Amino acid sequence: MRIKILILLMLMGVGLNATTPTKESVTKLYVATFNRAPDSAGLNYWVDTSKMPLEDIASSFFDQDETKALYGNVSDIDNFIVSIYDNLFKRDPDAKGATYWSGELSSGNIKSSAFILAVVNGAKDDDKLILDNKTEVGLEFANKGLSNVEEAKNIMSNITALTQSKTDALNQLNNTVETKEDVKPTTPTENTDTQSEEIASVVKKHNDIRAELFSGATMSWSEEIAKTSQAYADILGAKGVMEHDATNNKYGENLAISSASLSYTQSTDMWYEEKADYSYDNGCADGKICGHYTQIIWKNSTELGCASAKMQTGRFEGGTIVVCRYNPAGNYTNQKPY
Image 1: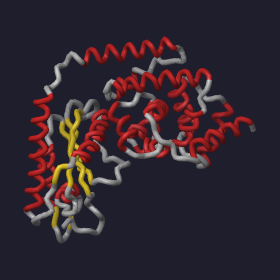
Image 2: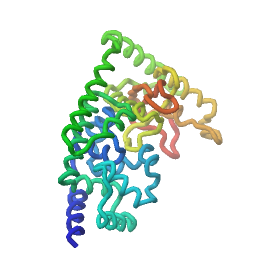
Image 3: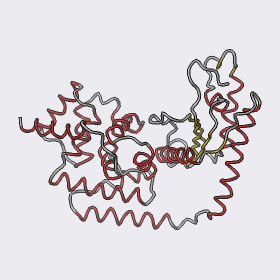
Image 4: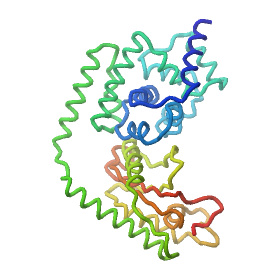
């Protein structure tokens, strides 16, 4: 009975009020769910850009491909519970706790994300020490601007409740950053000039395409939208995947990927090729994709912001992911683009 009361109290702390996320609390979610440090771009996105409470962020983690690759649809509940405890504390759950959580998850009384938050919030003694150590290292990983997923996993692999394990990991991080700083960065002037040209080019390309169909309603660049595009492009680059943002319910979104360098304008040219399969009267041809093109020509969409990132892993490692977002969003069902 006592363990049941304690667990119910933990769940009450999770479920009654929306919790404002902090970098520390989201880092603990990364440790628990993915068994790794947070990538810099991802942590900044969830805390600063998503505008979601911690409970919704925890739930959204289960929409990510990384989570699905680790746990599938969480059909093996007992193995899932063991994995979360191992990620957090490097131990198996005690028998009574495992039995209780298994029953609650199997019955649908709680969601997987709520279970994770409850276990995180209930950490004490050595469990709290190891989680605090992992959190400090994870925060440092992200604060140094690192985003490589394999490095994020490796840095956590030897952390225990001992302070020395944390110190060793932090020293390893410092050595990693010093090595990477040997690469000479592009000068700010070169970067700014290139970016300005790229922005002008992609805006002109969009407006030229739109001018083929209607006048007025030109698109303009939005730095605010571009920042959200950059945050998400960095996440995709770190994960090595191309997938739409399941948490984005505000902007239209076009994605493009290449194993080589890829500009915003080149991406727009790729989307423009869909025009051949689109008819204003009949819509998109069967079996074809036209949504990128129709987003470009969606007359009510008048603001644009694009960004790109290097693919750090996966099939397109070394290549480029481009994200363009549009406001207001287009591609509404049963509506024409103009």
